[in-house]
Length: 193
Image (cartoon, rainbow, N blue to C red; front, side):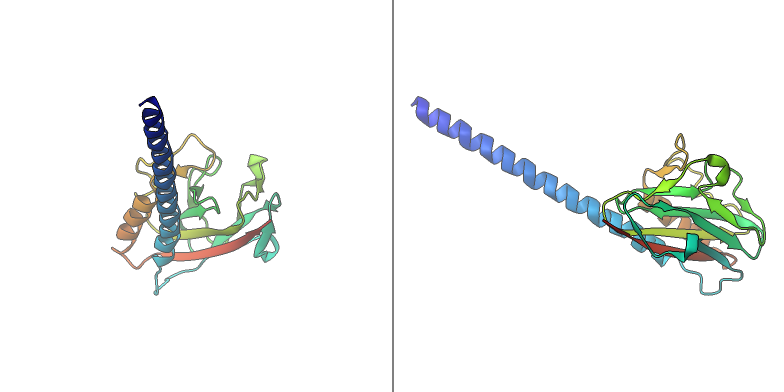
């Protein structure tokens, strides 16, 4: 009788462990799917009219980086405007690169080249893993956008992490569709081992 109870308890324990692994696998898959959705949503934000130009690039226009390598972004626009830069790393986390701790006023001046991280910060971006594609979207508008100023970003960091990036991007897209007076650009860099 005791052996049946022991065997039953063991079977239940194994079933709970398997169910736990299966549940974890599902939520990991959901998380990976959500991360792809963030990039897909950002890619969907396009303005065919682009009434002015915003450009983003990396040092020496590099398209791939090795883990641990330093990366610097630059951007410039041909019109005074408000600039918002969202970066989705290979980990799937989304951060606001601009505005940031050092460049709080995100009004960009026509013709001026901006550096991220800014030289005044004395910090460097070093490429972290895992390997994959890092996607960065820049949006420029003559008016401030409310989507990134709402709650939902961890602002105690130098570069705020979006806590609910999918909703933030959807809000931004809805706000932008009210006008065609904005511009966008993107850059994707490969991260290799």
